[in-house]
Length: 274
Image 1 (cartoon, rainbow, N blue to C red):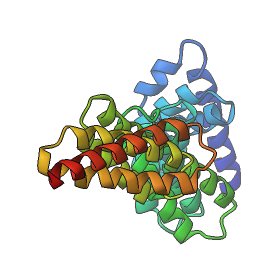
Image 2: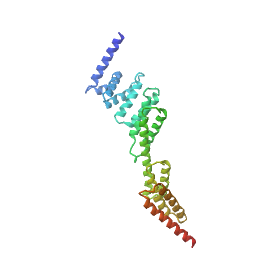
Image 3: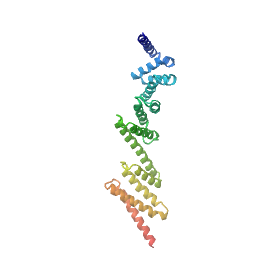
Image 4: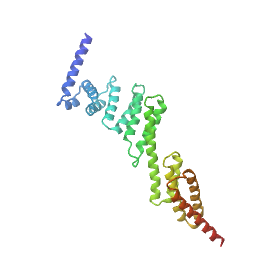
């Protein structure tokens, strides 16, 4: 008897969902107080790929339906619909919230991954602010530490490499910008920091080239008692550059700067003797 009643109740619910989700019934369903029908409709919409409709329904349920039996599913599916509809910023927040609310859920690992992945997808091109990129890196690193055997680890390493490269490019271009705006001392410092932070960077050759150019401009525009010391630093930087990049396309230009530095120092020393 109880089984029959449950079957009848389910049939009525499904019929209600079918009617309410018809062309004219969707808005009625959103306003409806029949949260069980709303929940079933949301699941059906999600499974059918109607993610925008499912998102609205799950969002409505999240705000208005507090049912221990469905709380976890509502929170999980809502986060998934945000991802599928391209709302990565909110999706990341929702998935991170899910891991805090349901740490022992069978979805907890996937939610932790999705939180970081949504931030990765929301990460802008390297020329823009990289706050989200840094947050994504931090979350992926936390994920790798917590779930080292996860099936997602190959992806995690790939995304981390991409985002570290993005940060590297931004730092490099910011450092070179000092040179282009004739802030030569700042350029030398920033490019030196870049080399320390990214010792394996494919931009290492370019960075050392700009250090030589910026260092020379800084030296010859220094006050007289500092010129020789700063020219000598340019010479030292050239020696390192020539050793590391003996076939560099920049070598001839840097050699010319080196020769100028040597000539200027010789001239200064000669003047000091007189």
